[in-house]
Image 1 (cartoon, rainbow, N blue to C red):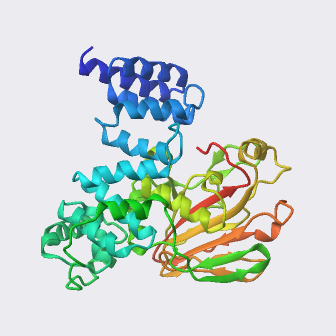
Image 2: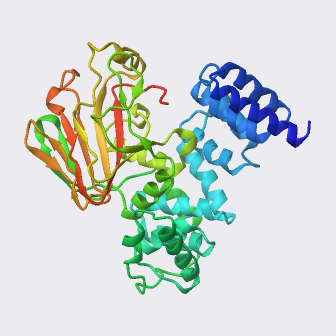
Image 3: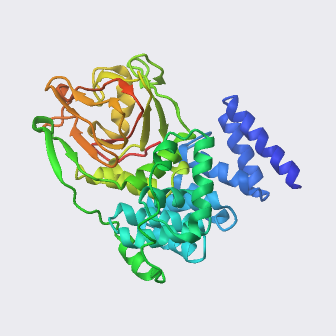
Length: 413
């Protein structure tokens, strides 16, 4: 079969999905995959991972990805998520990091950038600077943004820094003015020593997180703030990654359990499904669950929220009400949402506080600060006192990461 006919099969599968003939679409993808279409194989892995047109089979998805990862960068990135999530039998986080570092050592700028951000997440800024500098020298714009944010300059990266800033201004990126205003005359590049990949691999293998300063907000629901839970340069990276997929935010319909638009919630959001992730977003999910001393396997998917002037989320609770019909399927799948973890990617210029109206308490974090609270009481029952709201943004814009953590492990979407 020619490449053209293979592409035609893939297009037919896309059309079948659009027409809600998911089983037909999956069958077409299986046929095209068997005939060697790597793009169809990638789409099949996504369908297997999420149960599109058939059962959820994440082991099969990992195997499909493994067969095409050497030839398709997107598949290799998704495979690392499968490895870190243990979809691939016998694999784990350490295996995913080993594969990532192999790519970085072999000169992949995107892999070097990813390693750099992982090092920032774990608090190893010295090695992160060196790796991000290498990625920027290889013309990686995300690494260039990180160096700009940290005020690090080097003659060998001046070209990519200039190009990146021009591109941010041209595309009206929300961080453009802020980054342009940062002085990058100094300090000079942190060092010029050769990167020790063995040491870096050892430091990332366990994904250890540094402790943060904690302040109580509302003790009765264990609402606390965590200072500098995420490096500001990582916040910029996640924000930029999520911008292109922003959609109007939805809420769960109490009667049907389906998600729909509602005037109660006005914002934009991006859900980082596994095939949209890299090991940086995956590590952030682990970081955010660690803040409430729970296992990453209990987490839903990471969500980025973006609020423009006038947008808000009126008073609401995050738990599923057991007496609402639409909650039944979610409670069966992973149990109650016992905790909420938030990270401020960027605060509004004015307004936008997260408020607990029953306690007259609020939180406005700076970039990288986190806030966590419990949605259930000591007996595991829904806690109405966890009612909270996102106040309207008065000026500027606000971006948050939000993660809900369930009482037990589930198969998240």
